[in-house]
Image (cartoon, rainbow, N blue to C red; front, top):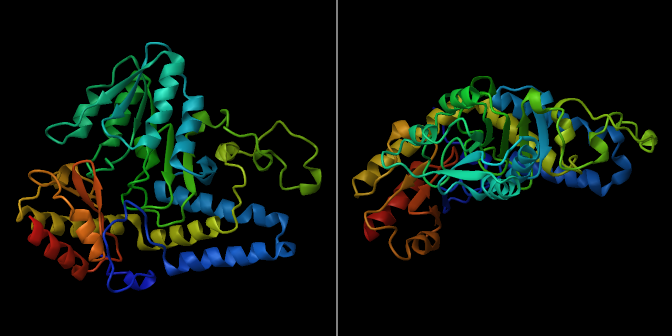
Length: 377
């Protein structure tokens, strides 16, 4: 178990922030890294061509370690939707084929596929919320020989319902379907191994469980797709872009691996150092240890909630860091406002009250949450 790390964050004592799935607070070291980057850009005569490449490569390598990939497989992107759009541009889709999505899936991994299906004359196959909470079994039932794309999270963003992506990946390979994953709600808090799951594309926004800044994320592109078509035609993704004096010698060749899919202006002098600082801390803690610690926290909360008549997805079918609590007749009116007034922060998503602690939370934070719940249930 990792002891409480609240001292690394700028969290006042009177704040009970149990809402990492919404937006992670930034560690002090992450804020300092961003401030240093801003100071660098304030003095542009000190910015060298090398600065456009070094931090990018460090960030690429660090995220690759989180998912057991190679730095060559990682692109820098601004959002999950950007990574999904890259996948949609490159994965073939024919008339009459299907794209498998979950019911109430996060929109970044939905809207692009709806548009792509309309363009191609394909269909969306929606996996309905299973009554037994087994998303893996329900998803497997929708994968057929007509399935072209299976676009999923690792856990459902409303209540943490877990998918066995290794098992689903085996089915995808058997049927020839591409697997496109948005693991924004699990990267950094759950172990993930691309060598076991074999996704075609995988994206993670950095501002939740990766503890990084908003507007920066990472895209994994499997080697078989690394000669594909990027969304942008930007200069820095081209071979030889390190030579600023030679940029007018236009090149058709790209930088190696997934770098061709990098967003324009990827060398953000504030955001990239922040992401690097956050990733280094996550790797120092170790994702496996983070996952164990958070699973213990949510299990304790779930047990206390059960005593109040609240239910949640069983632990064996739920991501350990994620908890969605359901009330017998839905969330009480005004609950979120009452919690916020007392400086206790959670989310309502669908019919669940989403409670998502991290290493900065104390037992006192949880006690304060239950003081309110006991009064309203």
